[in-house]
Amino acid sequence: MHVNILVVEDDPFVERILKQTLTAESYTITVVRNGLQALEVARKLMPDMIILDLGLPDISGHDVFRILKNDPASRNIPVLILTGLDKENQETEMLLGGADEYLTKPFDIPLLIARVRNVLRRRQPLTPAVSTLECGSLKLDSRNRIVRTGDLEITSFSPKEFDILYLLAGESPDVVDRATLSSRVWGEPQEAIHPRSIDVHIRQIRTKLGSESGVAIETVSGKGYRLRTC
Image (cartoon, rainbow, N blue to C red):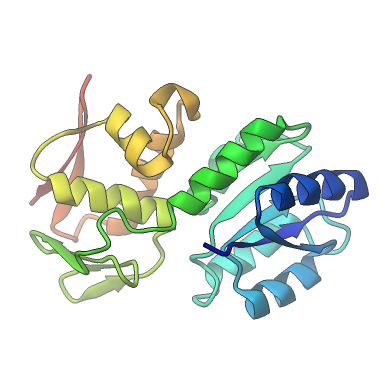
């Protein structure tokens, strides 16, 4: 499968490492060095994923990320955040905002490759043969990655949030443990992902579903999570 990756990085050394590493993996790489170029190229190219540095010379990577995620045309492009300034709570904030991965500089090249592969793997719906999955008042359109509850349509779910909800709905009313969530959504064993990643995404899904959706994600202590109808 042909894969296009947009790299947004203004440091020539890091840019060279990223381009060499990802080209060796047979990905097609497009590099831009500022935020305005990133927005322009992302909208034209519609890449399979974006690697986004937060420290850019014109507008910040935070602003680029926010604009991309607020635009219906680009909000579903997976984004791997790359930063040399790992501020307190920044990773949690970016994950809550819809980032698919978060990596700090200096980074380990095998870890970068693994994260990129996992992001690309997660682009595919968990069960693509089924276009619509229903659980109570919840309807999940896997083809367009749209969540409907009653007459309300929610399109703001990130790819990872959608996959978590899809998995929970497909297994409802059974409990899905954290190990299963890690392997099927992140593509990694539980110990390989950030300890709070699952919790952060579950909290965001609950917020987006709201209290009037007719479904709720229940935390089952010591076991995992269960989607139940109200």
